[in-house]
Length: 417
Image 1 (cartoon, rainbow, N blue to C red):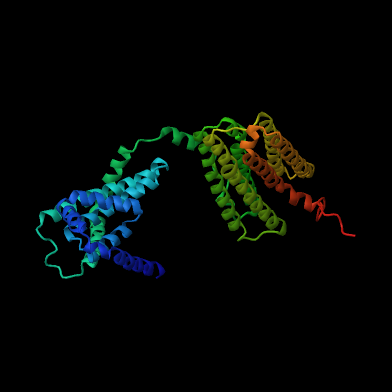
Image 2 (cartoon, rainbow, N blue to C red):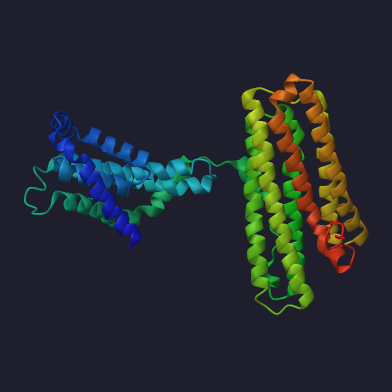
């Protein structure tokens, strides 16, 4: 109801805004030109729909022009047909970065809409005054044309879907390299067949969580190289990996939610929550890599600036430590080893010391007015902060293991006297 109300309100507002055009001197010339040149009107309608990203908004705008600005039906009908063609272009534009299978459907939709619009336009042009005998408000008539055109498309095009599917598959070439890479990608470990068996299901979720962690690690490993000399293409490619991390995160949460619908022991319920919590941490770590670290690399490349040699060495040492702790965290996830968990938590203190040292040395370089350090100061501090947070997110896998053994303090604060 709110959506319909907003559409009606927008139509009224468009009508009020376009009312002065009825008195404009150029409007009769524009309307007359579009009425005489139907192909141009069709192209203008397609362009409007593409720019507005909505055929409905374009049709409403045309209806308002007909109602308030005196646009003739001879010009309005091609504009409406063009709006339907433009809607097909929008779908092609929005799927331009997707794989081949995703591109086939919008292309078929565009072909149907374009052929149908041209056919209807030729039929209307061949009839003299096709709307002369219709007694209806022009704006409602425009909306009716839009609806009838789409109904006509359904009736005429449904029998032709199979031939068109064959045609678009021939037109769009196969990306054999991408398909080969997809086949080589590891498949999800979330086995739906064992959802009813919590023991096996939680093991499957752990394996999938391990794959998620390895993916985040793969994104993190080349960070220093990207900060030093990464190209926009390489950086963007690494950022796209975050989509897979997010997809695995969502899949794990839904899978464990389904497992929790069954009967779980207290230990199994606790383990399931630990897995979900670590999945959230890994998703956050992936965001830090994609949206913080790699964005900093892009900005450095665009501004054509670089870290000082000493600053880059400090970041590289911190980065190496984070990578080692990532491996340790994934080992702890699988083994649950208490000694390894203690080592992982101890690494948080060492990382805190490294962060403090990096800040102090960076401030010393700023005091000495090192040019590279002054240019990259914000980036340097952001990278250090992000690496420390990523390390903490991975180290969190050790917390429940040590908590069960009673090896964690409740607080780091010194008791008050």
